[in-house]
Length: 367
Image (cartoon, rainbow, N blue to C red; front, side, top):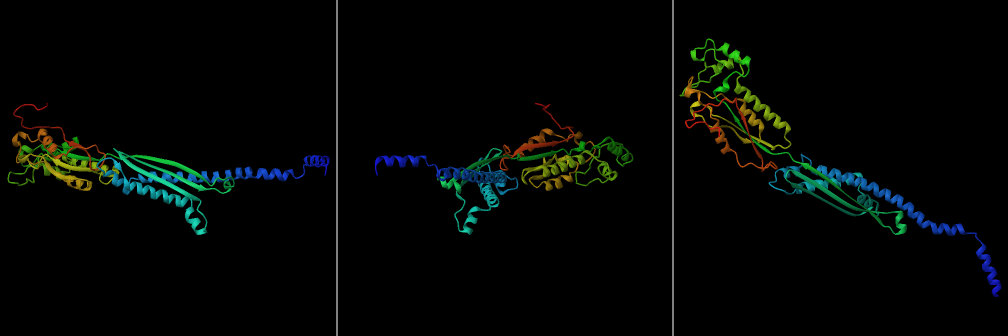
């Protein structure tokens, strides 16, 4: 075959366009499949990331739940540090959410005898306490197996994210309640109670106690209680005296504390009075420091007015604020920052009518 014939055949071949579509389709099929695979696989990846993020958010919030074992560990820590129980709880919550939202791909794959969709999984969580702040942080990174993208060599897509939650614990407090029960707390609580007492004492046997607004509680130096004293007159006629209002206030305080506390041992209380009798005025412990607030309420419900052996005893000098405030200071241990039950703040509640009367031979003590 001569060269002219070859040139003629080559010219015809180049002019012939039949079959070009098949060639173009073959060339284009790879990027087309790649684009379709990208759309499908990235949609799956984004859906998985959304589910993982929801699970992470739920896990960090759950790790800081007020009623969790981890929270109990945190509030009883004496200082800052890692809260291990909260980390374990948060990780369990995350895994439980993933199992629920993704139908556990690994288990499904095992049942079907195929490779799992998630072939790489890295989850870390940290829960730390710094002062009153608890901070939970969970990070996740997972590699999801691709389908159509494998046609262009992309075997997997990584999805990752982070969730953070911060919770500020409530302050822990010890309340030392100093309750004035000295004789002036026997006066009628309201003008109506004062009138009731004056009217009820018009004809009492003791002339010094007649027409009196004070419910004096008289107990002899031998411990014999005078059942005809104005204290019992007040009780018989239903007159409310100031010491009754003190008991009501303490009851209301304990009830409010029980309702508002976030943890069972957040608030502790102790109660003291100025003493049982005017012949032995001293700080008297009514209830020891305890987180059993119902016990405090019960102990203070029946606080009695300080007794006197007779009218005008010791020139009515039974109310020494200096003495009881000094003594209650000795009962209070070193105050803390309130960050945990081991370091509670210390607060004194002083409930009084403000009538101070005591013997001061060296002069005023205002300084």
